[in-house]
Length: 264
Image 1 (cartoon, helix red, strand yellow):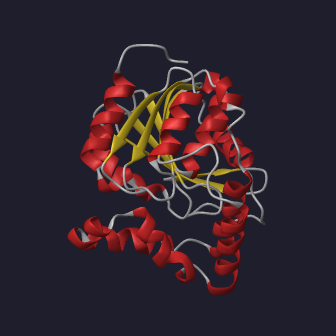
Image 2 (cartoon, rainbow, N blue to C red):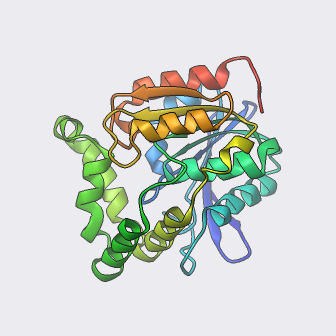
């Protein structure tokens, strides 16, 4: 566990897995931390050195003043790669982390071998929805939105069958810094990659969740059509497919990342 000092913030990151293995960077969703990727550790560290971090405004990273932009959050990733002397990595990002991947794939394609974009979209939600959420968090804290968010993150059937895992996810969400969360909501609100994805030159796997109300399968299919040569996979899950369908997620993502073919 370590911290990278940026110009205006500290970024928390941690390593897992063998030092001589190729590196994969995982990027968290809005309202979560690097711990959201715990279900991937055992499977991925058999093949990769896993690099996880808390995005700006989340976990142990600094919550700088609002608003943020996806370009700014992607810039944090580039600074992290530079500081760790990583010329090129594999990448996996979910929701907001997927949007960060889209920017990296379009603006910094030589930094990525391949990327997996999970439960994400070129444009997520409407300004009114995001502005209402920002106001709710600013006035009532994370508990004001946590119940509605967890309902979108995990299906009712999963929440009933896995109360411990659900409680851990809810605790992570409620522990998010409200100011950092609101600032990052603005980044997602303002992001629109629909006109930029044709320029992505990184081999890409898109993973969607059949029961995801936040970024439904139609969004995932649209991504796979906009990014040249992208693969599309749909799992039986809501928004956090890496948790709800962990075994299928790990199998599909690893099969793509380990396959021979274009590296961007």
